Length: 501
Image (spheres, rainbow, N blue to C red):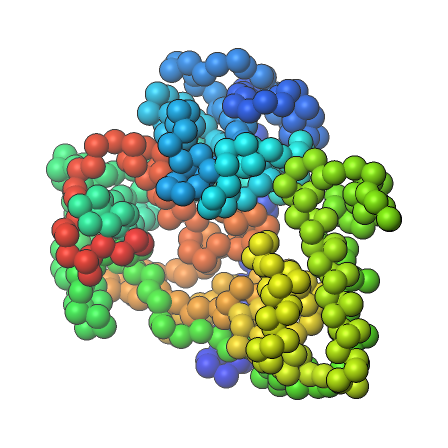
């Protein structure tokens, strides 16, 4: 064990061995189906390279009796069909709705090969004008991990052949609300292992809820009593009904995973450094961006040399026009950086040097800068500098984190899920502190198996998950089974009970 003492409380880092990334080991084949204009065979090689133990079979159509996992390539995402978006009102429906309605029992995973972000006001042609790109390693692994987890659940596969952790003798219960107003639906699901197969109970169905209570009785747990105590604790905080929870139940054991409403703070020295960076005066040449186009762009396929090879930026006249929107945006950014640097040269007559705070705080200067960049890409000046590792906000969540791994306090069962690797360059937000609260059976509670279940790397690829992964299996069950059935319970119209979980 390793120990560390931060300002809030003492933690111990779990260094349990034997936790490896999920690797699918299906003996039967996966199937690939195509829903967009490029030749499907061009994608298959990438999947075979990463998963040589699998056999991939391409198919022309899906049938209702399909019993093998199916990967569906598409060139659109659900957001594109929303109001004011490019595909709103199109004759062809969102393929997700079509396939889930027509083939509810088929194990399927979608992978979007259209790199364009759907934007309000774009036409269907603009959105669907995209360049052929092979899915990268991250996309391949994420899509197949999810596909095989879905197959494990929908087909009742033997989990010992799929997962790196042995099944635990616990029942995991999750509740959440989805939707708003009259469309709000409450899901409440229990999951447990029967041998090496995971089973689910939809607690909104009377028969399955009765089976759940029988299981609680067999474990020696008074569910209603423990739930009332749990509800009382939440009402003490916000005086509302309990709309979401994650509970683990075992023999004589009832444990809830709760937020402590605390978070680990950023490094104070780093915050001071950022404040100094904002207030430090720089020569205007030191603030230029055009020489750093490749870093700011962040896409090797659209580097300055690639733009040159494609004939987009030759002087005095380009040899070719950008072939799609991604290329147009890259060329626009390239020339905007040139104009911005010219603007900085103009400022030399007024400033020998300038701080970033003064540059961005002067309304007249910022109006000119906004004209240069037009901000069509949604990237402001600060975002462009942040891509170079400069002028990150002093209160933003991307301060270098102090803690890595899974840290926990064995005394009060608080824990923090950090990074798998050593220090990461970007942290999305301060690490939230959570805790296991034992309402029954403290003497029977072993925290380590649940910490191990957060150290798997297939839920968030190559990162730990923030709760035991068994709850992610419940999410998959809701998304792929219950969400496509007629709702059993409609939540009340009380707005306080309508928040998405």
